[in-house]
Image 1 (spheres, rainbow, N blue to C red):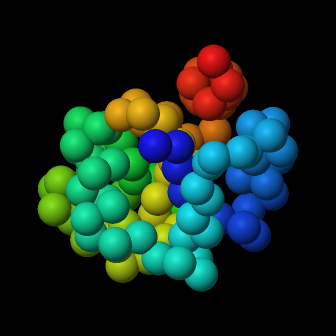
Image 2: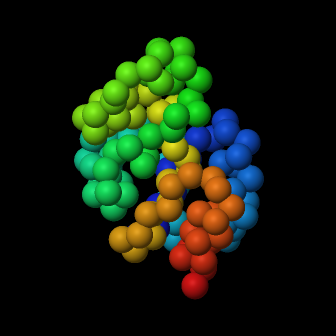
Length: 117
């Protein structure tokens, strides 16, 4: 299975999706218009080794809610990601049981290679 969770209004996600083209056979899920389910997030968490690697500390809400001053548990990360899409570090690419999280050059290159072996 090949799937990419992304945010359509995010210019970084748009740029990365262009890099990944062609996207034949890849299922795209725009997380603002089609929110992730708890099951989808659990699948990502099991591949990532927890919810924290999926959590974006760059989200504006992170600072607005004063979360940087709190000790967050795995369950807190899960609840926050489900509560608001902006807390998901994006894009998240799933390819045949492997997960690639975020937009660092290294992660994007590895995801591209996995999508187009």
